[in-house]
Image (cartoon, rainbow, N blue to C red; front, side):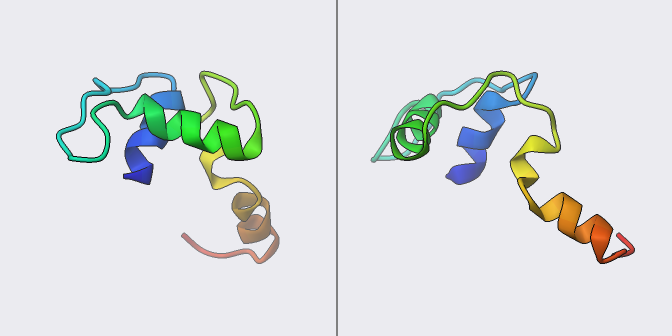
Length: 64
């Protein structure tokens, strides 16, 4: 459910409630990511989640 974790750091996150056996709160995915990689600012811009991919796509002049 990576997408639900990403949603929680965007400007207008949805309700973090999850209905799955492993986790019940999407913010736990953010916590797991931060434990592995360090703090994630909140809120992030919509292009933040693309990381280095957007500059590479621009450089390659990909027509999206």
